[in-house]
Amino acid sequence: MDLRIAPQGVQSQAVDRLREAIVSGHFLPGQRLVEAELCRALGISRGSVREALRRLEGERLVLMTPNRGPSVTELSWEEAAQIYDVRALLEGEAAALSATRATEAQREAMAAALADFDAAAAAADAPARIASTARFYAAMLSGCGNAVIEDVLRGLHARINLLRSRSMSREGRAAESALEMRSILQAIASRAPEAARLAAVKHVQAAREAARHAGTIRSTRAA
Image 1 (cartoon, rainbow, N blue to C red):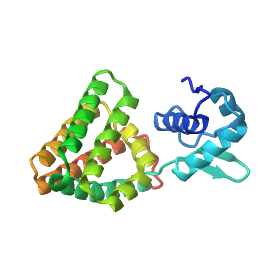
Image 2: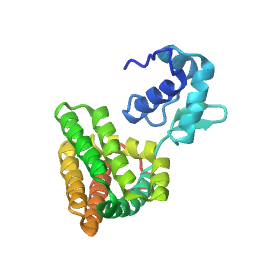
Image 3: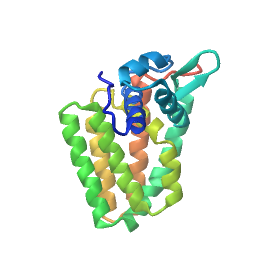
């Protein structure tokens, strides 16, 4: 994986590259992140690497441990389940609100993101699948008209994408996810709030099960 970046916008690019490397599984949960190695891989100074790691610590993707340094956060199944619970509540409400408030432009943005998801799934392009899913939900959240829901989910954005990469690693999950998102969009386009809520909750529940069966998230207690 080539992590080297262009000289312009170094700080933002460093954060983006490292985030992508973590979400994609290039850096594994619990893996130490050695600053000297990251400097060489990214082609930037140690100060820039440290600042990027601090920003990712704020997103809960990196853990800073005294006498050990930075490492990739290990997300337990219990933590993951709590995130899915919050998603089901808030995204269900956001979908219901979007069914009554979303503009035509916002619905078109969701449709465009879904088309991009289909193309990414056909090309087996995992990063593009994650990016298009994020755009789908960004358009839906924009259409819901509730800034608090949007802010809370934005705070979970990096970890949600991390979980998406895990759930979509299960064979056949991408096709299922496309159908589920299409159901959400159809309910929103039909101005059917409760149908949209149900479709959004079902999508989160299915993603939760896919992530659990993918076996890529550790459990802190016996199953």
